Image (cartoon, rainbow, N blue to C red; front, side):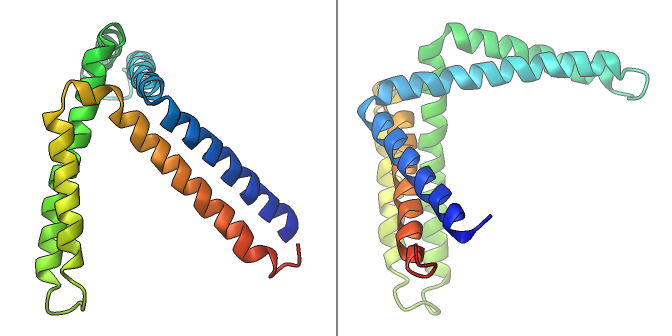
Length: 178
């Protein structure tokens, strides 16, 4: 593959990611619901796989009953969450909120540990404060935030990733005379 072709793939991927990201940002509720359904499907499919795999390999493993139990739990969880999409979104959003709260603690610890090493160590305290506020808003806004948080975060992620891919294309196109 030539550099020109490789860079064209990077540009194409960047454009697709940006379009998808903008779509997710315009329809965050639909994106969140779709994400929730995908998780339900993943639990269901993996649960069925665990059950079938345990049944087929029961003569080769000692704890195949545990795999069957885990498979049943995953399958039932997938079905229950599919029929309770609001609960599914609330659960996913709560986990995201807790993640931001825990990440703020980790960032604060990093800032304190590096205060004698890094010149702008205090900037991490600002980041930690933002992470805490995001987590706090997400948790305190439940159940209302459940319908847009996942879609907004996914959209922002896709949009930024697309912008980076396009930036990579632009910054390298003159190197390879494209």
